[in-house]
Image 1 (cartoon, one colour):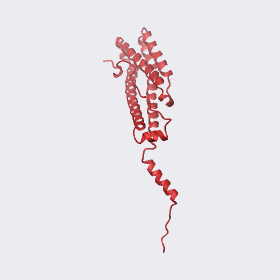
Image 2 (cartoon, helix red, strand yellow):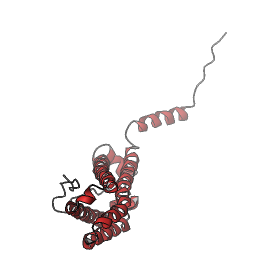
Image 3 (spheres, one colour):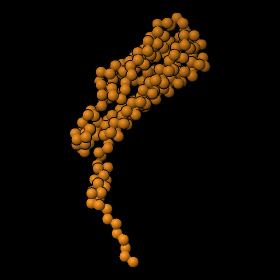
Image 4 (cartoon, one colour):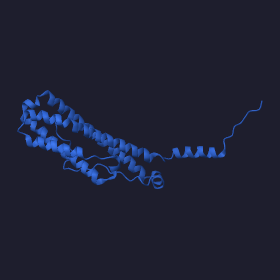
Length: 202
């Protein structure tokens, strides 16, 4: 019995070959890395929001023990308000001025929190309060999460920018993705920004 042979049309064969060739040459890397940048930024915002959510309870707890520290409590509350009022969407990631404003507001909040934590040194009864200790622990964990989220964002931006500036991504960027610019990255906006805020009370 003769064997039946099926032949694919030459156009379909060419399309399959072209699809295989293009899928292995990095044509999709730029949009994939762009999505990773946006996802990493969402994690940065998520951790900053977590910190902002902890602050009202922290302020209320400190206020219960140290009402005379009104100025410090007011600074923290105002810094939190400024920090949460600046929202950066995925479309804003390419705007250096908005990124700078966001970073400065977060840095001001970090500084205000550090001053608030220093206040506790003068109030032993506050330092031994269970609610305060739990909030302190959560804040420390959140600061660590912020650092990790920022690191992941920096790495995602580096990967994306490198893809756009090197072969073959540079070619695909010029042909297909020219509307996707290089991304801005975090920059230190305060003195000693390379040092983590001190939030432990030993």
